[in-house]
Length: 188
Image 1 (spheres, rainbow, N blue to C red):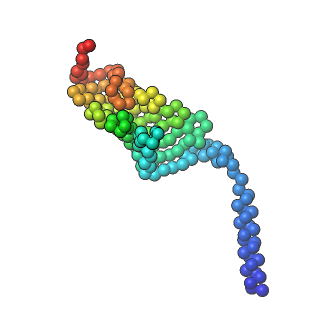
Image 2: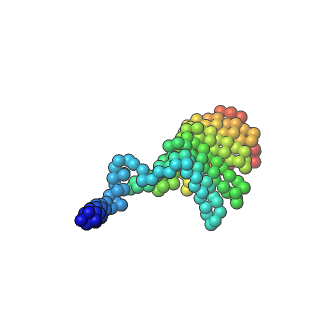
Image 3: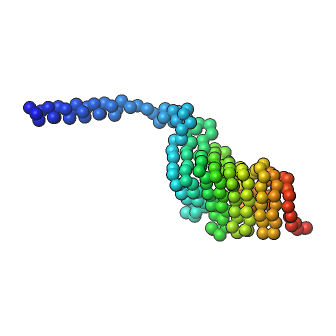
């Protein structure tokens, strides 16, 4: 009799569990909409280290203490890096590299534009040039940086300080809007 009660109790438990399991019918679309309405990320990564490759060759590395994935947004999917970001881009078979560092970043997937804020530093290791600013917009399609904030650019022979600039992502060609400082120029 005691054995019969145990079997009956276990059977009822299994049936209840099975019914509860199949009663959940949230579709992935419903979950995406719920997370979007609550402004919650669809994913979170701590101490992320991501390596990007093209044809088996490493093209860049992304390092961040916290990555929030908001790719569930219908109109403007993005990734947020609230605790900072470090990106190392490799060109010319890894010989030329550019490092981008910032305290906070947003990267929009559809437009391929990123906003990097707070103690932004861009280093071109080959040309020994350095750019410092508080905010930077990076168009990854065109490989171009833009900012309307104060900046300082250190080149091999120059230090340029000003407000507002545009430049290639390797800091090779730039347009400074309002400048102060000594700039060596070459006449052609």
